[in-house]
Structure formats: C-alpha cells, structure tokens
Image 1 (cartoon, rainbow, N blue to C red):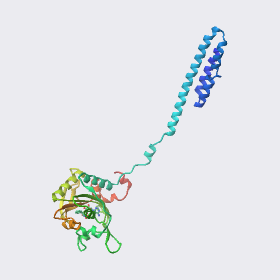
Image 2 (image 1 turned 90 degrees about the vertical axis):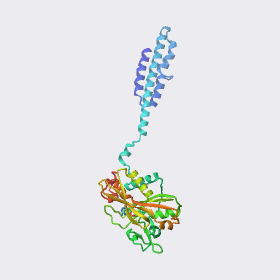
Image 3 (image 1 turned 120 degrees about the vertical axis):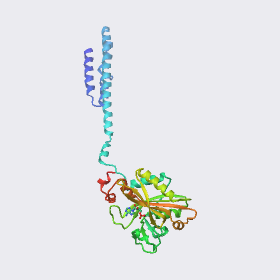
Image 4 (image 1 turned 120 degrees about the horizontal axis):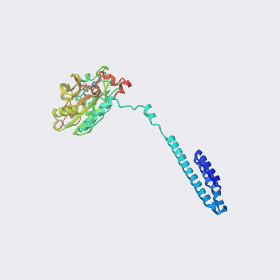
Length: 332
Ligand code: FA5
C-alpha cells in the first residue's frame, strides 16, 4: 500500500504541474483527494491491516495527502496569476499611440497676444468689452466727431457693405466704435478694453494687412488727465514687454481725441515702431453719448495687436501671421 501511495503522490504532482486551467485543477482535486481517491481508499483500508503496520500506513497516508495538498496549492497560485496577467493584458490601453499620432495644436500668435493683452489690462482693473464687426456710419465715424465732410474720414480707407439706404453700412475700420457703444450703455466711471477684428482697403505689405486686430482702451472718470494716460501706457509697456522696452508719445491728430498722440515703442535694433494712437476723449464725443464733459474726463487708445505680435516674436513681415504655413505656426 505504501508503495502504491508513493506512486500516487508522484503522479498527482506531475498532473498538477501540467494542469492548464482552474477547471482541470478542480477535477484533479476530486481525483486525488476526493472520496474515491487512492488516499481515501487507503485510509478506509487501515482498519484491515495488522496492528503493527497501521502506524506506518497512517503516517504515509497523511504525508501523501499533505504532499498532494501542497502541490494543489502551488498549481492554484500559478493558474490564478496567469488569469490575472491575461486580464491585465486584455484591459491594457496603449495611450502612447495617441501621443505619437496626434500632435496637440496651439493658439494662433495673434490670439496669444490678444489673451495676454486682456490679462495685463484686467490686472490693472479694466473689464473687457465687445462690439460688432459691421457698423453704421454713426458708430464708426459720426459719434466719434468725424462728420461726413471731415477729411479724416478718407484716411480710414473704409470697406463699405452695400445694403442701400438709409444708413451707410461698413466693416469697422477701427475698434473706436466700441467706445461709443460702451458710453451709450454705461455711466462713468468706465474702464474698458475692447479687442477685435478691424478692416481697411489697405494692401498687404510687411506692416499692413487688410483684416487686422486692434485693442481699444477707454477710461472715463473724474479728474482724468494726460498724466493718467501716460502712467497707464507706461505700466502696460512694462508688464507686457518688460523694462528694457521704451515708449514715447508723438503729437498727432485724431478727431475723437484732443490732445492726440501717436504711441511708439522701441525695437531691439533701436528703431521705433508705431503701435497706435491715443489721447484725451474729445468733449464732443462725451456729449454725443450723453455724458457731461464738464463733470467727466477720459482718455482712449487704440493699438494694433498684429503689430504687437510681430514685435514680440521679432518677425520680419506681418504677412507671416496669415500665410497659414503650419511649419511657421508650429514654432510658437
Ligand atoms: C486708429 O485706428 C484710432 N482709432 C486709434 C485711436 C484710438 C486713437 C483711440 C486715439 C484714441 P490708426 O489708424 O493709427 O488709429 O490705427 C491704429 C493702429 O492700428 C496702428 O498704429 C497700427 O498699429 C494698427 N493698424 C492700422 N492699420 C493697420 C493695417 N492695415 N495692418 C495692421 N495694423 C494696422
């Protein structure tokens, strides 16, 4: 019997080591440790053995059972690990596939400049205002103190939209109409910036585009002076460009500001780039919007955003911004 049990143990271990899945294992468990197994049969036969052989037979049965139980445990552990690994493999997602195939895009240079301008002015206490890109003559010119006969009207190279009478309709030639729309709807104190697209019949060259972007600024409050305008511009230049960039005012003329100035900033090569116009809001403009110029004063400015982007990234030509050459745009 003892010899038989030893053979059973060797066989059981070999079969358990080969078991390929948990179902086979359950069958082997029944076969080698169940009621009809060699071990169970041997146990029932002990009583029939001569008394002096019972002890050895008992020890052998227990040892065989223990050996088979241990091999069963090891096989179970091995198979459970395999099932777990397979599950992990099945559920795995290869995210690197996405990373390699799709390169993330980025915001256009002009959008980046515009966002940054908004951030700088919001940081200084301004709010952001908006207006339509198609305007009437009232908002684009008349309310801004540019009546029909005024020679300045010609200098804006306006693109008209033919919708017929009664009003002249045009693509706005600057963001200054947003000044009027804001003052019509809001009592002072007013501190706004208004970025947006503007249009002129200008032919594209290294510094001009027919569709470009401006950012308008308007402040209306009590006792506002040219000193407030200068201080605001100074603070803006320092925050936006850093302290190494210098700025200057040049006397100029706009019908909607008095006095008026042109605002320039220094380029790395020492030359100056015209960024935009500014000045104290003309009393006629305040009156046109129902604001008493005796009680309120204001300043306004209007800068070209595309030119700011050109300066910031040291581009040679403003047309680079709209050529849509992905190899160029990808750099930023
Ligand atoms: C104006 O448009 C005034 N509305 C600015 C202003 C606002 C003055 C408030 C006073 C108070 P100007 O035509 O100079 O001004 O244009 C302002 C800026 O827009 C220019 O300095 C330039 O930076 C930009 N700009 C004008 N035309 C173009 C163009 N074709 N392409 C790119 N940028 C342009």
